[in-house]
Structures are given as structure tokens and as C-alpha cells.
Image (cartoon, rainbow, N blue to C red):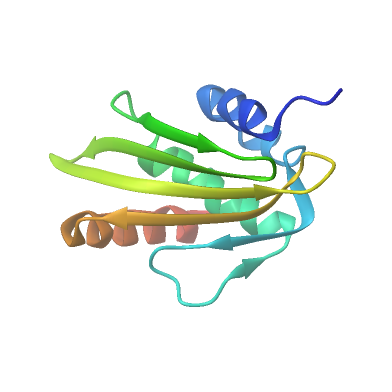
Length: 128
């Protein structure tokens, strides 16, 4: 049996293993950003956004505080602090019958956090 999609996500996230994202994502995966209007489609683009999120959000304060996991989807609430700003958000993750992530949506609050994440993600994505 394959590793559960959420267990695999936690493993790759804990290692901040951008290379490990390829094995987690379906070829037709879609990423929904809290600040970019259009969905980002395709494994390479989704991996780029998630890799940038590892850099921006992946500090020692990042933690999931609640998880609701279903048969093919999950809601993972997270909290972190960046530059003194508390960031609270939710990752909505869907996967297919092969355990590959097909849909990844991020929602963030409060507004001050969204503005910060928008700026920092833009910087990281432009530098790659």
C-alpha cells in the first residue's frame, strides 16, 4: 500500500524537501494561491509554489494546529509567525486514487499576513 497522501505531505514538509514534491503531485495538479487570482496548473508550477512556501513559511514556528482528513481530501489549519506577524491559514488538499495530490488550496488570514505572504512569495518566486 502507498503512503497516505497527508503522511507523505508531512514527511516532505518536515524535510523541506522540494525535490520530494515531484513524487507527491499528480501531473495535472492545481494550486490555488490566496493572492493569485488564477489557478496555477501542472506539476512543475505547483511544485514551484509549494517550494517557495517552504522558504517563506517554513520557519521553526510553523505548525499544523488542526487536521480534518477524509477519504480523498483534507483541511489542515496552520499557524506561524513571520517578521512578528502571526499568520493563520488552511491548506485544503485533495488527492486521487493513487494518493497523488491533485488540488492544493491555501487560505490565509489576517489581511496583514496576506500582504506579507504576497510580498515574500513574490520575492522568492522571482528569484528562481
